[in-house]
Length: 163
Image (tube, rainbow, N blue to C red; front, side, top):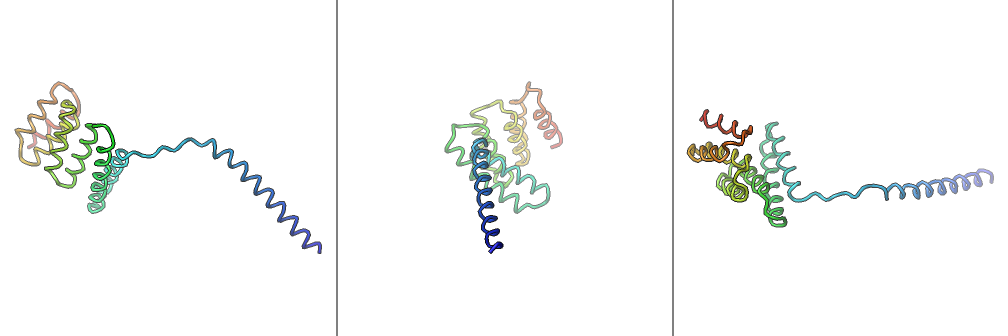
């Protein structure tokens, strides 16, 4: 009889303590900041970064999968957001990594129509032209960047000199 009574009291006090702890945890839950949903653009950029990591480790199939996924997210972002040269840059970059050079060139040029002095787009488009054996077009990209005094200008200039 004593054991049974002890067991019931123990069980009852355990339940009271558990419910009280749960009630206190709700208070803390309300104090947590709102979690923000990632946009399609940020997810696309993260996929590109993952692809670059896989590529550096020699995991080309996984890298290409990440680049393909990034393109899907970036195309959604392009559809849902205002026109942004950064989206076009990342689309061009991902297509370039997948060796789809026509698409890469198209998106780089779209980005340049919005922001002709964008140093990143000019640099990567110039390097794309060098890989396609179009050094004259690469030099035009270099001219478009002249006067910026940026590292991208020097990188493209060195690439052209090595070509």
